[in-house]
Image 1 (cartoon, rainbow, N blue to C red):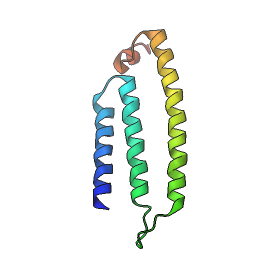
Image 2: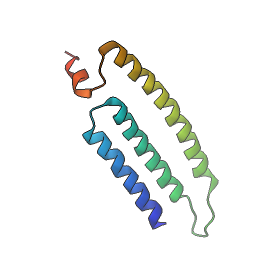
Image 3: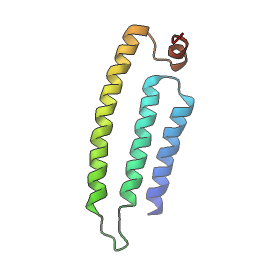
Length: 100
C-alpha cells in the first residue's frame, strides 16, 4: 500500500511542478491532467479493504472521473487551438499582457 501512495505523491509533485514552472498553456493542461491522474490513483489505492478485496464503488467513481476529465481536456484543447489562432501564442504571460 505504501508504494501506491508514494507513486501517487510523486505524480502529484510532478503535476504541481508543471503548474508552478511552465508558461505554455498546453504544458499547464498536461500538469492538470497529471494531478487528476494522481488523485484517481490515490482513490483506487485507498479503495482496498482491510480484507484485501477491492470495493467497486471507487472504481466506478474513478471511471466516471476519467471520462469527465477526458471531455474537459477535449474542450480545453479546442479553446487552446482557437486562442493560438487568434493571438498567435500560447504563453500565459503574453496572453495576460493582452488582457489590457
